[in-house]
Length: 122
Image (cartoon, rainbow, N blue to C red; front, side, top):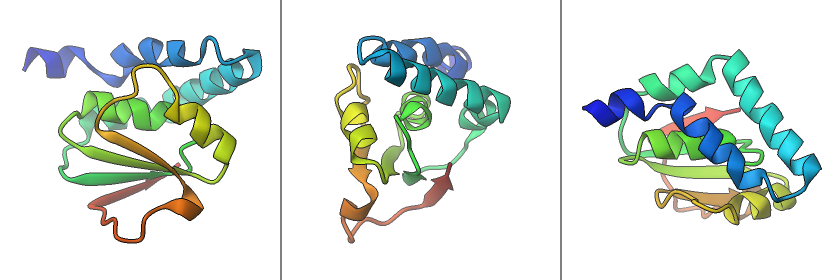
């Protein structure tokens, strides 16, 4: 119970941003921008208050900030993140500390047999 109160999206966001620290200034800036946009749009709070189970698809994943935070706050969920840009997918897939409950795909390479309980489009 205590971990649910403490381990929020805001708690994990700085940890996640460190994944991009050594990937170049441009990528760091884009990841930081993704994080700021999540804060402005109140999506960080929505991550914390999500109350579902099963498999969640996160479409238009970008560099993965949202899906990583979602996976860390909800380790009981399976997160499948998709992104059209193969470069962003490669960067997200090779982040240190990639949560074990997340899979990241180029949108066009998403396996057809995957079923989702929820779809979140960013």
